[in-house]
Length: 257
Ligand code: ADP
Image (cartoon, rainbow, N blue to C red):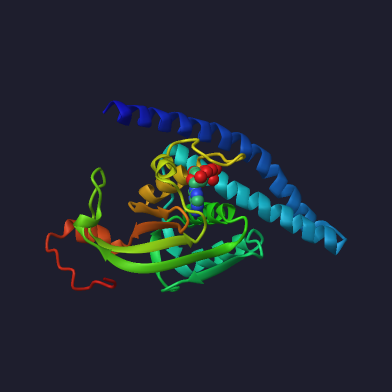
């Protein structure tokens, strides 16, 4: 209970920090976005107009991130309908410029048409974090694979301390064949500010877990030194909530073993 309390307090200060920071960042980004927009729409020189569009888009993305940081701080979340295809396309676009040549990126999306309740910006941020971690873990190159699947989770899938909600889930996975992580690193992954990087923040995975939890989902890590790392995010599909309320445990609609 003591450690639980310390964890809660750390979380609280982190949320306060995020709240303060997002507020200041928003005040910086808003004028940047407007300046970019005005340049885009009114510059005579087409090159300047393109530059304006770029500034505007970056400002917009920054503001979206700030927005999700604010929601994190407030513990509130804007629910919307997320399109799996749209989410993957956005991720692909964001990664385009960040994937070095030496890394082979592959995306395997099982159902582009799938729509589910969630928050696009948050999930995008979460997947982006995982992908950038994988890329940074493989400076010499390697394979980065993003895959999606739908499956049914039974009650025994859930760990102690998690609310078991059996039902249908979307699994979003980020897999790399980089150096993997030692047991020691794995044990500390979700500690605030834990990083092994010179310029890391140590907040990436914590914020991922928070986003997944706010979707009612769970996260799993599978990593072995020398073999690579796999992060799986399990996001409940609408039926999961209904299934949880439903007492008859019929799993005949299992989509994957
Ligand atoms: P940061 O990226 O700022 O260090 P994170 O919370 O995202 O913060 O990650 C914490 C640590 O987990 C990283 O510093 C790294 O040691 C380890 N890590 C995360 N993803 C991977 C990966 N795909 N391969 C190897 N190590 C990883």
